[in-house]
Image (cartoon, rainbow, N blue to C red; front, side):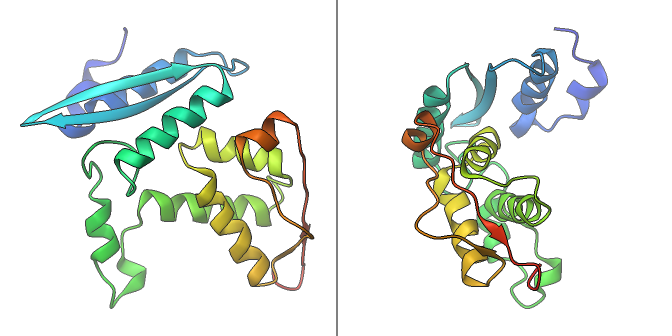
Length: 180
């Protein structure tokens, strides 16, 4: 596999398979449609790493739906692998010290990409969401929030789902420069 011994030794037990997934991702050509996603299964004191791979968007969506149904906190394992539940509950008094959950980090990253115009339409938004290992509802929360606070403007709805993606239903929004 050619994973460095140092990377393996420095990888925490509970996230060891992520090191393997990161290595495999580097082996996949950039222009490939093939993507892989990790998922951890804890049984007793053992943690088993599952690596899901596919090259079709429908398969990615189905895998992520199941993963997030098993664990609505982070969709990465059948247990709280990254202590996201603790992050949600911690440091409510000092928000700047609060560690961010997987969903919070994704929402910040997506907000930044929309504000900087790296994501300008619903098709790119959907791909970014899925390839980041998230559900469309997480992106919809960001879009709705940005519309509510006046950062973006659009009419109708922004379709963020596989059916709209399959139909190539592309919807754009306008950035309100005064709120950006």
